[in-house]
Length: 280
Length: 354
Image (tube, rainbow over the protein chains, first blue to last red):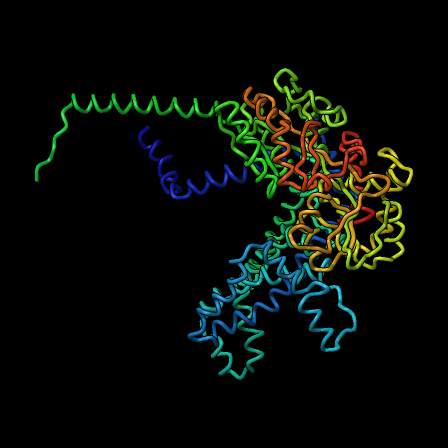
């Protein structure tokens, strides 16, 4: 009996450090998701799949496509802008590294609403950017930079860029420089070393940053609501409408699960890509 | 160094004292909780007026305390619905647009005239909106708001507004609320349908009007502050909004901001006050205070432009002429609109956008 109890105790003791986080996870993630699922599959008459079948309507398919495409575009842009910045910070910034990190994190210190209103002031028809474009003769009339996808993408790239930069920086910093030097000694040009050695070795940072940015983009609704127009319809906005305006908890829950599945799909893709790269 | 030893008797004595103290302490908050109610309020001047006039009236009348919870209806309704037996909110202030849902969920008590003496001074037009769940406390008017510097000759009616705006006369500087704004169904869809010969059952004309206006709307606003920002930034010169907030915007320094009540009558917006089911009886006293004429006069002095539903309210001279009489407004069929809202939201998303 003692041996049996001991056999149970050992693995429990081994996982004891995980219990607080598991409790937190169960209480604040698993249980709410369960409640949401129950709401999504029930209405006043009992069990129903009506909320889910509605999701197949063209409107919701279009909205899902909008959401995913927005996520991909913002992820691609933050990667293209963020990678060189991360590279510069790790390899060239020297004693300015701390200051650069601070400047990169600065946008996160300001509330998302204030930041969005800031973009409205800058990009609006009477804003600084348009005034500059008109005064320089680049355009005759102010151009529409807000209340469309342009404004939404600019504001999201601005706010999510630090997540990409920090993810890539952490991997770049741990990169063994001798591998790149070996490639150079063997005659590879700097561009070739970068494309064939540096980027592949920072793949995990790229994937982690991309996943973070994608998830945060597809779940964002404040920027879309404030800087988007009538045609910028994404899943979080639909969920917000169903909860605050028409108060349809069942359908809002189904939409939320749909959004969650988008995130899970991104996670699976990231896992596959990470695994494939490791095998390679 | 000398250490003080605690004898067993001393320990037991101290423990008994501590236990007694704790028991007394536990009892006290329970009593205090019974004498404290939680009432909801919108933010900004609303909260200011509630704390300045309604809360003191209630505390003076009952000797109890009232805590004010600022937020919005969907959040309050969800909280009450989740804890029906011991609701965390006792007096629910809500827009009439939500009354249908509140009734359906059964989270508010039927009004008890015996517990709300001020109810006798509330005309029926302000009471049936809630179907005796609770009376309306104040009303606003959704009117035509415009920038007088840019539009010296504003439309006099909703029909004229739609006609001139959809012709492009005001340029791409028109704004109306979008479907993420809780009052859009009455302020835009029903409003347009009503003046163009439709109704809540035949909203096609309303949707058609919105479709015609869309090319001239840079942004369907989603909140009051957003609308004011659109006017401030010069992104909008004309739109539909509540007269009271727009009047405060004008009084706050935006001298260009003017409004006109359309010929057909602006859309009446009602704020209804409910006693939540299973809330302490004290909540009735709070409801009664909200309907008090003296409280109402004070409220009107803070929230300029909004009319109070109690006929005995004597408005301060400075604000009286800024209130649109209820007789000059159209009252939407709130409950029918609430019932149509899910399908209208879908239709709006399909045909108009966010």
